[in-house]
Image 1: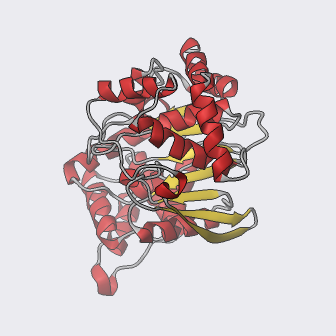
Image 2: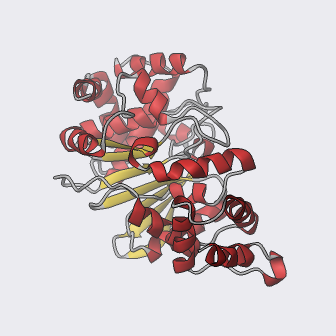
Length: 347
């Protein structure tokens, strides 16, 4: 097996003139061999850094997704009129701006739109604030739930969370390599479009660099995914920024892989052009609780901007003005807070 993996290292690590991209099948095999420990530590480290320098292709990302699909966990389909939105957010967290996606998830679920999230603890290379810590601060602890219990919570509330240390422990060793190398390997790009849901899904992925969007498009196309939204979001997340125009790519139809381009300007909808900086986790959780209590403030503006967009994108509301009004109604009426209480009661 190590001889097979050595060939993969040689292909991606031979430089501009003689290096080659992996096929989809080879990328899947390489990913499985790393997760299962069938390659040596030296080979895995060499592959991860060489592949980062080379940069992945969409076909290679599709192969990596194939491996995760084969070895990883999946929440099973639930009864819903809408495809589940699967939010792809960088696993190494946030360090500069306040995350809003837990509020977005609660708001969407309260409106009848299922949401699946995934991630782990504080992880390299940024060791930023992860979603799991925010949820714990809000009284929802996903870390100890076996997959069967998470499935029950998802079916009941419309929110599910795949917690990798519990549900996909094969990934643990790869995080050690990321820490030692100090760089994000292409696996970090693939994770943004991973869909640990076996039912009809709408993949939402954040990105930073424009070429990433093209890789997403190719990878999802090869895997037959026709519903997607790509957001040039805060720190690579799918949280829409307020300090600049939100650049968004949408799947144009259920049968086409063409991207429809949107540019949403916050001030056009009455929002100030300011992102909320990230303080301590305790401060963020307190601010989120104020949002759920319907109190005005900067984080409420971020919650409305994001909640409105995703209510519109889900099809619950026909346009942005109505979606923004719906988001405000859900937050100020206590409906979103009640969804959090429902989650807390099921822990």
